[in-house]
Image (cartoon, rainbow, N blue to C red; front, side, top):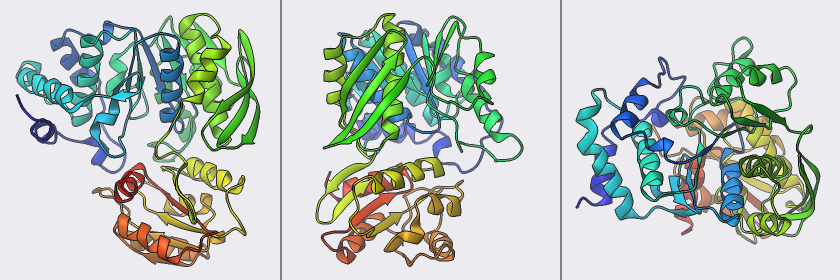
Length: 429
């Protein structure tokens, strides 16, 4: 039997769109459809909750998974990208797939590859592995996160009984013309006839796009469901959540950032839509109380406070900056370790991170062919008035920040999940 390193070596031979910069042209679901057809359409063996959005997909997927599992179901979850190990992308009831199972899945795919007739990408093959595994282990439901936009994403061979759109922001766009409408239209592509759409985006200009997608029902945030109250609490947030059939108060969520309240509202609405009934208060309390989110405003050290946040667009960066201001900084002293991937508006990202108010900026480069040169980040940060230096290696950048910091400082490591993953590994997490 092949080992996981051997199986991953085979997978790495395929084109990896995650590693390519810029807008991907000529997208089509045909290669993925041919692949799952050869596999016997495993995605039809269980119902699917399908989710997309510019920010909050990963957090929302974890919350939905926890709610469904606490409700007594066996839940498969597929997310991307991973922080440190590829196994993280495929999980059952929150537990990543083990090495042997993943190796077997990938090597089975390698043997069937010739039958497909056309080459598949890295992400298509990994998605197929997840869909196969969920069928093999007979999950009751799969929570499947989109990798790229929605309509032509490999995961869109799934027909979601419930579709979730968390929000629409600067996501894989050329930012020309009415780019927000274009992004919304692509995300709306995951909505299938007969489904329930849980719509977290509240921009009224975009709402008609999602209604045209053809869901049987559309639940809108702030109309049909909402986070009515969202207060800072020790170790997280204290929420009041409303859905079409229930209202829950004093719900503790052990995650930082007010934006997580909106993610929680989407997740609870989606779970309620799937079950077609409200969830018991104890189920919600136990599910949300168990949530952890590595790499999403994750506190990994004290004196100085070290925070890892995988914000990778201006909206996410602004949320990270706002969360820092919300009770985490003393005397506004912070050191920002930041690295990014193309295509990103470096200046917009740094502006959203409020680097002009930072004590120091250390620019690094994630381990990717798409890495923005650290020198470009230093130049942009300097133009914004920040004191910035270059330290290309992520681990060395974190070490440098720790040497410069006082016990009362905050070190924020951000800009990309690839940066955060490298930082976690460097810190022994």
